[in-house]
Amino acid sequence: MKLISWNVNGIRAVSKKGFKNFLLEFKPDIIGLQEIKISDKSREEESFDFPGYREYWHSAKRPGYSGTAILVRDGLKEFKGVSNGLGNDYFDNEGRVQTVELDKFYVLNIYFPNANEQLSRLGYKLEFNVSLLKYIKRLEEKKPVIVTGDFNVAHQAIDLARPQANEGRAGYTTEERDWMSEFLAAGYVDTFRFLNKDKIQYSWWSYRLTARSRNVGWRIDYFCASAKLKRLLKKAYILDQVLGSDHAPIGLEI
Image (cartoon, rainbow, N blue to C red; front, top):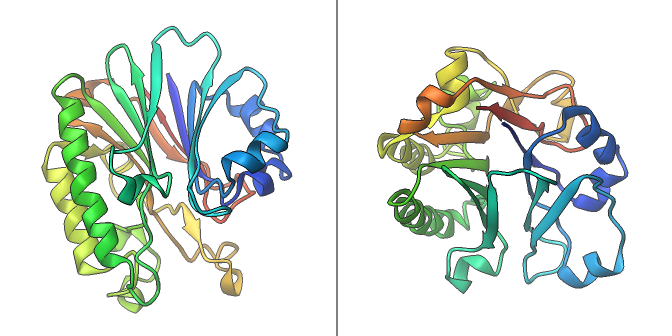
């Protein structure tokens, strides 16, 4: 099974930049999208073509902001359904969490809040993280989980090009990094780091100062899996040659 996650930074924009061809080339069984930036009303009025896939959307209440979507390959026999949200409007109004149920595990597609440059949303993000982990633990009582998406945090110094210069900034605060450590310690595996050890590769680059062409990036997009799924992990990778967003797609094969 091939899983892909991609913060597309706008479903309209990425659709104009070859997203359909991306699906045809990489053929994921499930792809989770973050930051779709489209309302339910606008989506219903516009036409998107994802041949061979069923669509599941979780738009934010605020138009043009946040939101997630999941595409599931037609005929995927393990697929049982999709649900949206954490059950709390405080978080769910921003369309940040989707859960795919498969026969033997869950896949969560998540767009974690950004703490913002002034760290004005750091508190909100930490509250979200606490509620999310409780939700994941409830799911795990039934089946293992794979959690993917834009976590908006570089966990360790190896995960960004300039750690010293970014110390204390959004995505690299002590609070965010400590939560990521606590999350992994609670029984989850960062699949890219588990399968690629000390490989340096990034999944996001600022649009400023040609950061991508100079590879001054951050690894803030993850596939994390319940430890009991370790034996199923085959490949974890970043498709950093794929353009269309300020993020690269990431993949996991199990």
